Image (cartoon, rainbow, N blue to C red):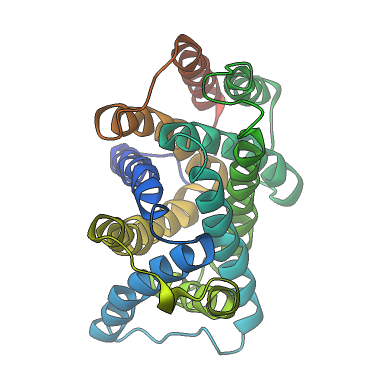
Length: 292
């Protein structure tokens, strides 16, 4: 894994902006779509431009080839499960809170990387940065305005969803020699296969009457926040490593708060701002001591 340069950092920030904007769009989409259907339509929208891209670039899609089990597992852990869990959680909490809770990803990712990757070991300074950043998340659970007895379960569900991204990220490294576009398209196709029966059996989407706003948000989630974002993420993951890639979760809350406040008119409390400062402090310490 190489040291991140200016272009790598620019891609990381772009990914944070895209995923930061995803949460208010998920919130809008949940007004009309149930979680399995939301995740399904999202990955279907994502798969179309990805399939076209592979066709134009003459890239072979290996979803059902020799390594189909790995593609399927990544599709399940990296897309299907987190998309459903985050949709369930975001439906009941503020969109910016969902973005902030994604900041637990570096903690999970760093711990997993420490045990499973030779070149991503946790040092004491890096651990300190991760713990400080995560403590900002803990502080949010003391803010009864945004997390209370009615929605704390949904906050926890969102955190579990973010952890699956880390698991999927580790699995994706096993395919780092494969073409970016092939891996992204293949795992997305498998997520469609997993989500389709759950959507049709439990939610009967054909009987729904979604709003235009929810459908447009879902289109954005599919094409931009999934298709384009996964291409960027895979590139960062294979070039700079899992720990560097998970730092995007520290940037997501900043953009999530901006979008939530100005677009969704969500209340920002003083604890939210203090939590953000703590998270940013964790970013600084972690980044300063991260050589991966």
